[in-house]
Length: 112
Image (cartoon, rainbow, N blue to C red; front, top):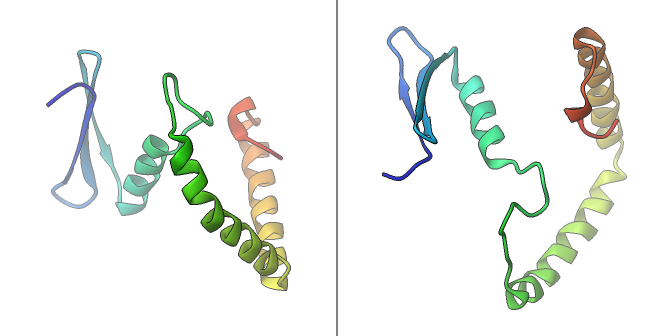
């Protein structure tokens, strides 16, 4: 396989053994549980930038996806007005404030 690659195997006693290979280096680590593995996967698939280096898109794809995107935006705007969403946002903000205070915050924390 090419470089980079990533494998995760169930570890004896629980958790996961994760091996990453990139730019000629191999890093092996242990994750305690499924949640940690999901968080790791999210970090691999969540881009920090809107378009990665050398990324291109097809204008026809953008045009084809626009109606569905608009429907999702409209649907979410209606749903976001419900009280449960306000409660979730308040709980999220409290938890993030506490986490930032605990570790001193970071420029990579994202919007506040």
